Length: 277
Ligand SMILES: NC(=O)CCC(=O)C(=O)O
Image (cartoon, rainbow, N blue to C red):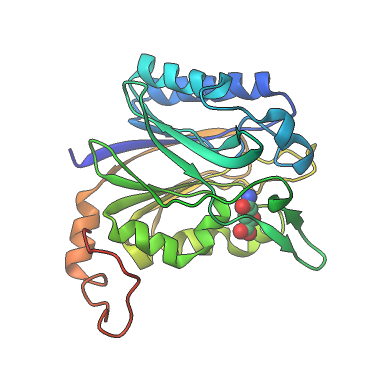
């Protein structure tokens, strides 16, 4: 099965969990109706991206949000990469993505590894670690199509993580994200493209749409980049579902024609992973 249809649900997140869940459900239903195999939600799709809200919105697994995603995945027979939500585990809270297969089974859970603690002069200031604990695991899930690496937003800035997921066999990397109005225009497209080109993967980055009523304004511009670095699907800043069928043979073809992964000089440098790409 080399063809796979991805849907990115670039939804508008607001300050109401109920409304956010309803919107996510509507968009996943639309994606399924359009024949998508895998639907992707953005980072913090059930909660405003704001330290003042994370704790109130946090859920233990299995909670309201994850039950909804699991039921939808089963009913619609669609994979769901459930963006991320605040996950409570005892006294700790994580920024977590849950991934369900077509039977509604949980097949992956990624807790954001790199927390977004930044202070850009004249721009964005945010400190995720005020609320969240650090995830410890690299996430590569098995699907009937291929292995898929999953990371969350700021994680995509770390080339070592992206390369490790590739060396673990990922042909697709999916990143639920929420860049902002400082770093979005500066880096979002460049990072998505270079991660796709470096690792010769399909790179799928899902953002919320822009909501000027929130304290943190997401940049939008969800996109899919192919392993040659071409943007094959994209949104602007508005709410939308974008759908694209890709052919995974293209990953193999490009890796054969331009064998970057084989040409690595691991006699000189190595990031300690068995090569299973
Ligand atoms: N939510 C995030 O991790 C934001 C990351 C971001 O905007 C960046 O520039 O990196």
